[in-house]
Length: 127
Image 1 (cartoon, rainbow, N blue to C red):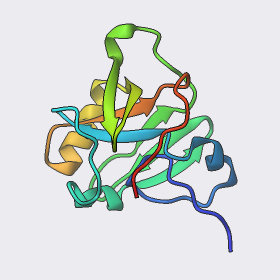
Image 2 (image 1 turned 30 degrees about the vertical axis):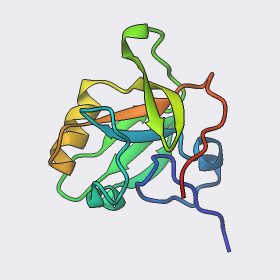
Image 3 (image 1 turned 45 degrees about the vertical axis):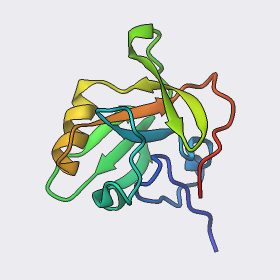
Image 4 (image 1 turned 180 degrees about the horizontal axis):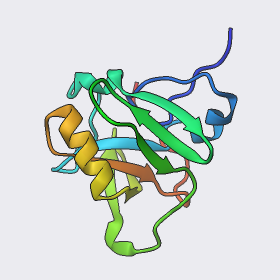
């Protein structure tokens, strides 16, 4: 049995070996800064994930694909936030307006795609 990885927490799985280093590196939040789980946004499960040519590729029914660079971190502190995941405060970087518009449009609620900051120690994901 091959391993499965979830580069974006609560979204689709991929069996790609290169995804191991990106397992749960991204997450989705609402506009109030709350981490979205499938319980809060069931359509997250329908978002397909693939790693391709240095990009995180997101696909969803009825949407154009969204490509996010894998290893680019914006050094502008204005896009760096903290979010609560379980009981842990996690440093994250906002992936920008295009990603936000894509997520918001697909989920039907204001949403942001956030990347766990690489300086962050391991995240203790609930469940």
